[in-house]
Image 1: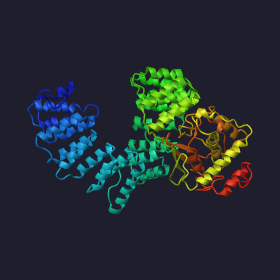
Image 2: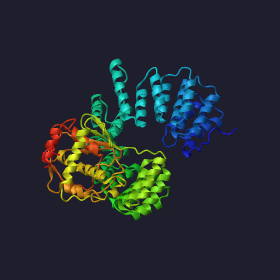
Image 3: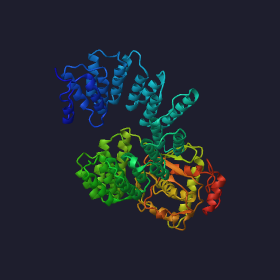
Image 4: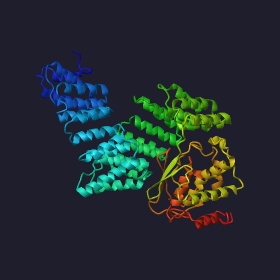
Length: 640
């Protein structure tokens, strides 16, 4: 009879341990249990089970849950089916609840929710562990509707139930729902003295706050941890660092990081801190953090080098990027496609297109869409039309349902002034039913998150917002030395020039609005509309207008109250922080500058607190607009 599993031979040290001993189920079961719990060698559990079968011993009912855990660790559907057959053949199912629950959990971990549900339905009287295993299975498989149904039907819930539901919402991108479930959990606990959150719950909740960029809610969760006496372990500290970094509070992220004893830190929290500094544009600080990591004798992994390469991308550090890429290989780590994408990106942004193309050709694996996308952006930015066309066509072939691939190809043709082909690329997109996903921004101005969608005019304050944009556009038109850029470089072919002028003035006026409202310490504003501008340095189409705006004088602004900040969240970059901490701002000192969703940025300015100069809460009245016009030297608003 063939063995039920294909198991590797046992290691020599384990064979020596078993040699000469009288084998028994009670002796082997603890060893199988230890092997199943091992992160490095769970397959040894199956080798031990085969040894048990060959010795003519009968496995106990405790043996099969250990095998189920090993199969779950390996996430092997084939092993899962083989494990299920063993207790089924011995008549333990469905009566043995412990074995049945372990098999439900095993199928869930192996991404087989259908089999998990079928086995669950066979259990005569499922207990809370059974329900939790099924709920966790649907959550891990990202089947949120099924998880909701199971959660609603549960006769009772414990902290595992609530945590699984919250984590499922986070995994499915329903971050607001995750926070709503947490609030429901807290309300239930307050009314009925129910269960309270644990570390696992709070990690998921902090992850939801991080993805939303909800700094207010994130700080509230931090206070919750302190008020309920949660110890600052590595897992919670890492989640807090990640939350604060993604919400733009990099100083608070550093405070949490330094509050953890160096000797107790692991590589994950270092990676989170290095990555957080990188996305904030603090590339040099990110590299310095890596040096501290080495001094602390923490061994870097592939994620560490990915964060470092990302820092090099944000800072334009080409030589450093090559250095880290070679160090990654020298330490015996295997570069993944994400590492190559970062290397191609940093080379492409620096204009070293031949070098970037050489990296793509030398990759040991097939280039992914992220690698090709970085190369396409570089070709668009620096005008290498022939290569850009080839890469663009390849991307359209790889992702025919992705709107950005058609737009990228169209923009390449627009750079070459091949208008018919640019129009054809967009027409093919329409014929295939691919819809352009509008960019959006979410802004936290202290009253919660406000979402703005590109070209949206449904907000009650839209009239005032667009009136303000019109004023700024008029201000720019009155400048004698305004240089109108080449709009085709921005992929705006086919758009009337009058519309382009308004759009471009609107985009460029971003810095003027914030110059009058606040000083921008952050080095990045992120593009959300790929058809307008993405990853442009100063000097590529944008700089003449920026220089006009700030040529005459630094713009005076009021110092913000302590802790006052605006946070922009958009579809391209996780966050941006705009904080007023200086008395003036000069955009010319910025090394890199990106444009964000215009309506969202203006909306942030209009919602700014009344302590800001010019802007009142929630809306800008006509009187305020008149004052802006007067201060800008435009005369009275009514006259225009």
